[in-house]
Image (cartoon, rainbow, N blue to C red; front, side, top):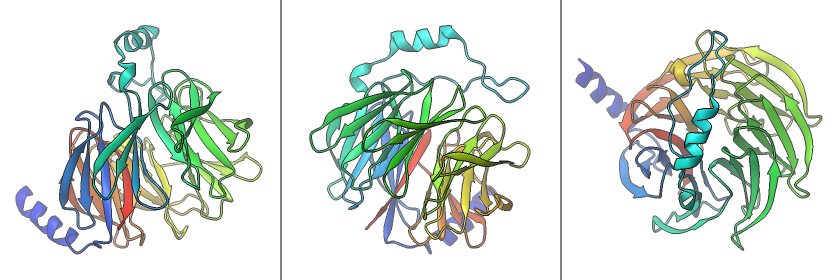
Length: 345
């Protein structure tokens, strides 16, 4: 029965748009899987140790991938409130066994699908965003509590900004004036001036804020708390918390994105195994869609019709039809898919 269902799903998926590609980082196998818009695997490209964050340049010609020589640890145990339980011994072990020569931002030419070079972006880069002109990288350095500004033309680090423990998500505001950095352990979110590289605001939210998404007009930001299963709504003009909305029981929100038309807020729920479709107006749940195991990174097709989720433990990518709110297929990727970038052809 499972084989019959898979055949039907793949048949449905093949009706997709061929005007874009889906690039997927595989954290444990050290490579990137490239799918076409129909969900077919085109090739696999080795990029280095532990690739996680991935973005495409504004002109769609270059892919950037964050790689790291810090060993992969098992997900931390959670206390009764859903908060992670850390030990100092774990941190010390990671520091002793880390390969710092492997850290960096890998630059890949989209057309030739060749790795061009690797640039220094501080210690253990995990996630990052690009400036709106595509000339800077703003990277989180998970193991040292900093954010690094990298100039892509010169290949040099311009600034290192101290934040708090375990910085994770990074996102540039739609107007390009600021970038946000979320810090897991403290529940802190830093808003940093993209010209002066100074902290203009520090928000205190629930612990384990994983990512940031903005409305296209830049009026609001949405930040999840994995531990508490909630979404925080931020006034992006005043940098103030507007609302905190609980998600369905069992949700562990990871990645958030807003469709290009601003009509849907999409949330991967990690251990919850679902993709949630929310109304950006009040964060009410419009649909919930079962996907693969522990969905993390998500990407949205240029026409807002499809979503792709990286499902780490099941080593696959879910293809979701956002118009019907159904999973169409699961396509095998590498070992532990993590992040997704959509590249327009």
